[in-house]
Length: 445
Image (cartoon, rainbow, N blue to C red; front, top):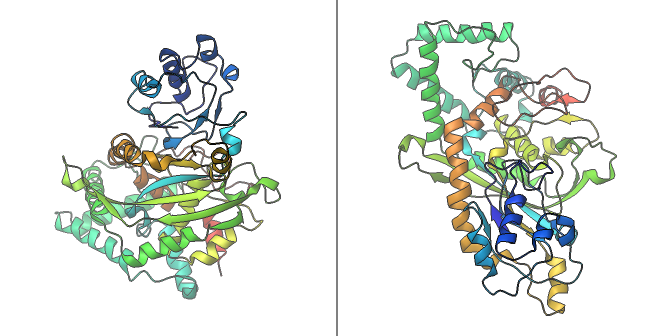
């Protein structure tokens, strides 16, 4: 049983190229140095019967994961010796004997993933963006489709605009910025209102408004980090996440699957959203951002499934749409291209072995249970995973960029899309692989 911070690693699984840095390569090196496996077995995973419970991709973390293999464990201090040869961002929690032929991947009953999301990600689309205009248009036509948010979103953006004016930016300057964005949108439909200074922008930013744009973005960033979610919006997000519970067809939440694919059906045991919590940057109080933790417990997951689940639930709240109706439509045969939320917030909490633990106990073995390591795992997450996520979010503005592109229609348009951060390449809405979320919204009635 182990945990790790995936930053700097090209995923968990060892690669043929010895120069590719992976968690398993460092793990096997440490196992050999500690005397837990022979040199011969350290060079060939098959010889030790190695198997991983859950594979994690590049940069993805795990508070708890399980690998199974044949080991030399007579030394009572073998765990400590292995950890001595591992970097601090990889820790062994425990080593347990199992029955012969144990395969941690096949014997795993279910898995728990966690996703950390800053609550400002649930704010309504920024006024005058294409998504905001579309929502306003649909609300005027069919107000009964939308849920009230107590005017929270509109008030937030109204207050931000007033803060910009109070900072010394004149109404005339604001109008000039708005005109620039309008012109940029016409000349480059995929340009993002959130990132006008990004490289590759086809519409140059006039020198007289460039400092104004920078000032506005700084004020908006400060306002987002000061935002505290209302009970109404939090309840809406929880309601959206609850729609995933049970058995559904998740073909729209992955790639390469159709509605008729037998493995598109997945069972979600629970999807729970925590109470909001604030992470305070001791060096800069303006970076005290509010977050929520989403824990999703399911039997198994497909590629990108959790990130797409988070994105769709967030869009449901941001657009003030009815969670039950909208999410139910996602499980239908019609193809819908759903963007992936950033990988930054995702981590594997731990696999669960409920069924196999009964077999272990019947054979007088200890069950595979992470609860006994709860304190060590929490300390590790706070130091090596949570802090990394928070600091990267402050430094890169990952979630601001992601939802900014969505508000500007710059979203997933094909199965090959890699949206999930600041990358806006290869995005388009003119494809034959299904409707975009905006087409989907336009068709609501």
